[in-house]
Length: 197
Ligand code: ADP
Picture 1: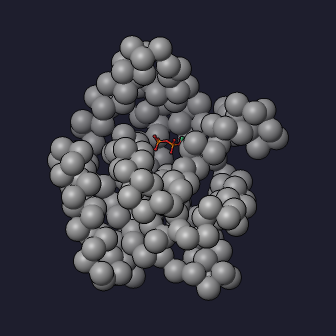
Picture 2 (picture 1 turned 45 degrees about the vertical axis):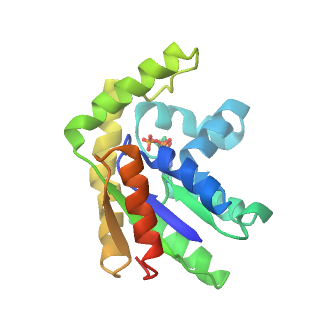
């Protein structure tokens, strides 16, 4: 199963990915997590990406495509994967098409979590509060200022990615404002429908 989860920051992609990982035994490939790991490890990519990420803007397509190209070659991705936070631009979507075509692979589903933007900041604020309460470290871009830039980047660069897949009849929209279990059930339904969603 090769699956893309689309949706703005705070839409619940991470939450749903975690469940799908358990259900299908395939890895979640989050470019955000991979980039944060590169920042933490102080690699050249991490050093180049840190300031861009902290501000809420997008890292360059070439960097992200390079990371994904390498990651999908790993043995654990052979059976499939869930892409979370990628592709975020049409150029990335085109790059992914090429990567998959070179390996004679195709996507099984592209699912978009539809959410009411007005509620997203509240979700991020709750995530920050919960993280602090649990003694965790808050992401450098989980603040109102960077969040606004993340949302702007989403509208400008990533909304066209939904249109890209919708234009090919591959997009399935799910209501991301519903309770977590309801969203999960809607995703299962979309996947079980058998059609290329
Ligand atoms: P979000 O919660 O906003 O969905 P992520 O954890 O997916 O955040 O990503 C955090 C940051 O990492 C982004 O704001 C961006 O700077 C960078 N990033 C992650 N994925 C990509 C991508 N596919 N293309 C460009 N930048 C990315």
